[in-house]
Each structure stands twice: as C-alpha cells, then as structure tokens.
Image (tube, rainbow, N blue to C red; front, side, top):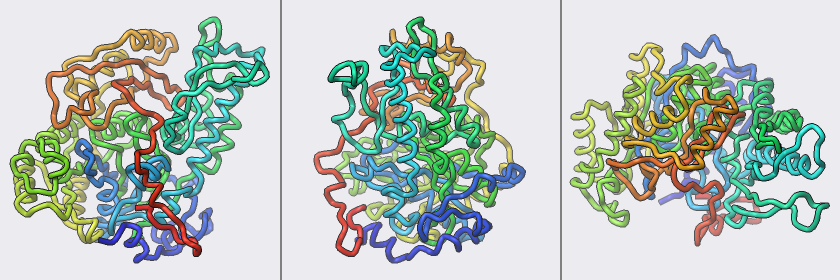
Amino acid sequence: MPTDLDIARLHPPKPIALIAEKAGIPTDLLEPYGKYKAKLPLHLIRPEKLGNSKLILVSATTPTPAGEGKTTISIGLTDGLNHIGKQAMAALREPSLGPVFGVKGGATGGGHAQVQPMEDINLHFTGDFAAIEKAHNLLAAMIDNAIQAKDPHVHIDPRTVRWKRVMDMNDRALRNIVVGMGGKANGFMRETGFDITAASEVMAILCFANDLSDLKLRLGNIYIGNDFEGKPVFARQLRAEGAMAALLKDAIQPNLVQTLEGNPVLLHGGPFANIAQGTNTVLATKMAMSMSDYVVTEAGFAFDLGGEKFLDLKCRYAGISPAAVVLVTTVRALKYHGGQPLKTLTEEGIEALQKGFANLQRHAENVRKFDLEPVVAINRFPSDTEAELSKLLELCTAAGYKASVAEVWAKGGAGAANLAQLVAEAAESRGGKPHKLLYNNEVPMAEKIATVAREIYRAKGVNFGPKAQQDLKQIEKLGLSHLPVCIAKTQYSFTDNPKAIGTATDFDITIREIEVAAGAGFVIPIAGELMRMPGLPNNPAAENIDIDAEGQISGLF
C-alpha cells in the first residue's frame, strides 16, 4: 500500500495565494512562509460573522493502540462538506515533534484525507513551537536569575518553584535534572526538569489568548511560586511578560495551509489533551468562523478528555458553541474495548464489537449531557467486514444515533459525502442554540472536580490526596477558586488507570495534586501518573526518516 507521504506527493499543493482567494482572504494580507503556507493577521477575525458560522466539533471514543484516525476524519469531513456544496474549512492543531520522531508519527491526517505541505507541517512548520519553547525558557532563566541575583523586588523561595524548562522532543533523560551545580556563580542548586513543549502553560495561554494585549496579560499572570513569606509570585513581578510576548509576536498569528483537495485549513497551536485543553487556538477557530459557513475542528483524544475540555474550557472563554458533535470510532476500537486481543483485531469479532459498543454509548451519553446530539463517524479500515459494519450501524440506529461509514482514507471527500450530509443536517437543525456547561464558575473547586469525575468519567467519588488538599487551600488563598478545571488523566480509560479499558464501573478517582495555570485560566487536578516528557520507544520513528541528495524526505509515515 502507498504511504501517506506517497499519496501526498500525488497531489501537488496549490500556491497559498489560491487557497487564500478561495477563503476570501486578500492576498496582500498574507505573510507567506514559502509557497504553500502563510501567517494571517488577527484583524481577519470578524466578531459580527461568528454567529452565522456552524462549528463542528470532532471527538472520539476512547483511544486504543490501533489508532482511530480522528484527524483523518476531521480533514475528510472538511473535504466532504465542500464535496456536497457547502463552504467549509478546518481549524486544527499543529503536530509536536516528539510524537513525529517517537511512536505516533505526524498529525496531518492520512491517505487521501491530509493537510499539506505535510513534511513542513510535521517538522519546523512556521516556528510556532520554537517561539513557545523560547518564551517558556526565557521565564525559567529569569526565575533562576532572580533567585541568584536576590532581586530586591522579589525574594523567590526556590523550594516552591515548579516552573520547569521545555523542549519539543521526547527525551526521558531530561525528566529530572539538577541545575545550579558548580558553585555559587552558577546559581542556586535545585531539582527541576524538562517537559515537552506541548505541555507548556505558554502553549495553553497562546491557545486561549484573544489578542496580543490579552496574551501579555495572561503571561504576566503565570504563577511561579511563593516568596519566603509565603506570598504568591507571578511572572509580572519579574517583568517577564513583555519579552515573552515579543517572542510570540508571529506565533500568535494563525497559519493557513490546505487539504489535498485544495480546501483551506487553519493550523495553530497544539496543547496535549490529557494535560491541557487539547484543542487549537481560539484565534484560529474564530478566524475560520469569520470566513466560512462551516468550520470543522477537533479536540484531542476521546470525548471524556478533549471534548469535555473543549466545551467547558475553550467555549466558556471564547463565547462560542458547536452546532454539531461528531464521535469518531472504528470497528477494531470497539472490538478492543469488547475484550478482543490487539493482535487479532483484523479478525471478525461480532460478539466483541457488541460488547465494546458500550464505550461508544457512554461517550454519546456524555455528549448529550451538554445538550448536544452526536453524529457517529465510523472510520473504515480494510480489515472491517461487511457484517461488522452492518452490525455497528444497526447498534447505532437502535441507540438513536445518526451514523455513517466514512471512507476518507481511500476516497477523500467523496468518502465522507454521506457523513457530511448528516453533519450539515444536524448543524442546521440546531439553530444556533448554545450548549450547556457542566458547572458554573461559582461552584467550589472540589465540587467542580467531582462533577467532571462523576458525570463524565462515571466515578463513584473523588479522593483528594494530602497534597491535593493543601493545593485546594492554596487555590482559595490565591483567589482562584472561580477558575474552571482541566483534569489531567490517562487518555486510555475513563478511570485514572490506563489498563481499565471499555466502560469501567465501581471506581473512585484519586487526585494527587492540583497545579495552578493562572495565566491559561484554569487549574489542573492530576489523577494518576502522567508523563509530561515522553521517552522514545525501542525503535523510534526517527530511525526510518531520511533525506536524499535532492532534499527529498522519506519515512515520515
């Protein structure tokens, strides 16, 4: 079978000026980055037009090692809507280099449902991640400098500093390090480490910022730690926000690219969904909504993580609401949740499929808790049998879900024509009605956390560990109890145990600690063990990536 890279090269990209013209963007407003990608100015956002655009949220059932293809469906659905005569564009996240060189590979879709230029997008792209990395690490350097220089304005207690450094690469050796070794001239010796750039609060801030002024304000609100009297210290007290925002001057502008079928896509921002909000920037979403009748966007991982955070966090801050929600699933994913072993997923398994359907049902029920109705997209794989696809459609119909088999990998937009029709009908019938939020800002912090755990994960209760209990008191002391919650949890299960697949019941969620992301505007209750600096696998994808004497890249997929 041809690789995704092979297929992409069969569809040479169009000059970015032609894509801009299709989106109604004057070419003199483009800031080109080569022939096929460009930055866009923020004044293209037209608030008065947002109400006329229909936002489509693409989410999914619980991910499995086999992969479900949510991004592929998002791109294919965008092409599918255009295929049936609708004006549509996508607003998606940028990929991180860590997964590109690690296990997952790139994040530009697959088959005939891709965004391009895929080599550029999966590598350095327009430098947004590098700018975020530099802004984050500038603050880290200024923190250590303030400790060393004994800044007369701020006396930071180094024992309370939790701001690590970041790098856009999987490197387990940097998870825990000691800085300041070698004598007083090198600073105060303390333990710290590196996170991957996608886990940076600066990334989360960029994705929620409304403009440069708001970006600078949020950067100044980053909580660093405490002084020796126990009072909170914020980045603004180090006068760091101005320089940080200057580094992000270009990164705040959305990036215009295209699908293989020549439809416009805004690619901007890339926070993880099991740690942060897992969705692209508010700016890119609003810009797309200013220019298109339909905008397809996605939220990372399954609906219990990315979907809930999209609706309770992003929409809360942006003042937007989806007109339709698409739940992506696959036959093999539901067989896996039904107990069929990973190595046998290509074999027919009707019984396991029926049992695993409960995972889809739970996510669909969660969608309905926001007063939204799911449309199920069945991403077809070559190993799916007609009997399995028929059974899954039958189960969806019996449960009251509109569903369609999508063949976007093989057929592009034409393979999503029926799905696009169902989505358009769902979006048009909603009539602009906003969705419900799961909780109000005024609810006590512990109850917000319990509400998400109880309503979305279906936990019996929440246990707050000793550190989490202290953190709740600190949040109250900081005056941040009004913030929404962004629970950090494994993506592989409804529980905090990644091995509890399917639809676990009769369990509690344990919150170990709660981090404050005051700049981003949320708190992060941490359930279970999460890796913010992944390591490379035994055989990383980087081993297969190469470039020839002509500059032709191979092995990205």
